[in-house]
Amino acid sequence: MAQDWFSIFRSIAVIFANLMFVKYFVFLILAPIYQIIETLRKSRAILKQEYKNYKVSVIIPAWNESVGIVKTVKSVLENDYDNVEILAVNDGSTDNTEKVMNSFVKKIRRLRKSHKWRRKQLRFISYTVNGGKGHALNTGVKKATGDIILTIDADSKLDKHAIKNLVVYYQDLKVDGVVGNVIVANSQTILGLTQRLEYLFGFYFKRSHAVMGAEYIFGGACASFRKAVFDHIGYYDEKNKTEDIEMTMRFRFYGYNCTYGEDVICYTEGASDIMGLLKQRLRWKKGRMDTFVKYRSMFFSKDKRHNKALTFFVLPYALLAEFQLFLEPISIALLITYSFIALDFLSIAFGILFIFVLYFINGLFNGKKINLGLLILFPLTWPLFYFLIWVEYLALLTSIGMVLRGEEIVWQQWQRKGI
Image: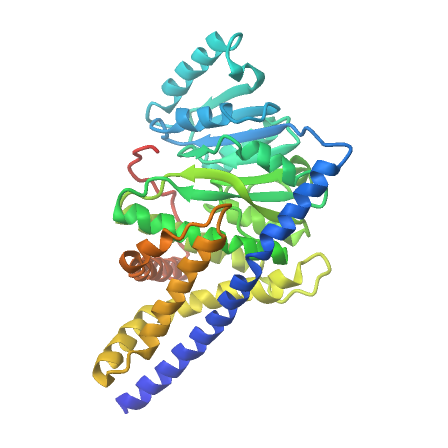
């Protein structure tokens, strides 16, 4: 009887594994095409007679971010694109965020006449009541005067060419939103390295989403939209703790187009401890679950506004991945047990080979230079992904429990160290 149940469970696990293999096979095939498409897009932009010098409004919401907010603002000031305004919004912080920023603003005013930063506008908006990140973002958007809205987190730093590279994508009038390439900067620890590799592979697959026109998550760490989008579909949902996911799904629901800006690079601070990581993933899981329920009509939608690759492939697979995750820790444990009992290690070998292929292809195609140094990391780091599976699994179970109990997630906070 036990053997029958094991066979059934193993068959289900094999089915899920094959379905996921199909997804990743498609993604791996499409990802290299991204460079061709974006090179052509940029070539057309350069050849255009009228190159638009868009004004970019950079919004930085901050709640208890005294450790890193000045570095974040400096990274925007030091960008090599001048038509920029910065709106740093202090969302009722209880630490020294306001004091630190007021001191920095005074310093900027003293340097303005002689410093290269004088060409950029900086406004610091502060209020005492903590209204949430969505409220802080909306405050910035409503006061922004730019053509493009770029949001970055107050624990992040923009690459010095990020805004200049961003504006190139918007020369294509069909592009209404661009998600940037987020890299975890604090990778000196095992936990930090794990997150850096996770982001590396995850954002590589955004290339495939871009090729299909099927991106549906703009992380708040580096997301941008045309200002006109907000006039049409409204502002961030202040009740949703993953306001970035909800906004992107609403953006796609109304038929707007977007792409991935691989050269729009933003460095961010990953969770510094396991509890911080778990709280972060719980927020993501619960927020995405709520958003999927809200926009459930987009799954297999035939609406002409909706991208069919998104509604018939990417979104269903995103939901399928959650079902797979629900079974994955148990199936992995059973697979390892079975392999040692039956001395059949073929399935484990295929799993390791698949991860090796991901490392190899990322090293070959991710970025302008070949980075086969990733292969050196492979023997030591591939087991770390199984640790992430357990973190995601616990977050999934907790979020399901919260949905059943009708509970809402609260904003997580971890000890900032700065980047």
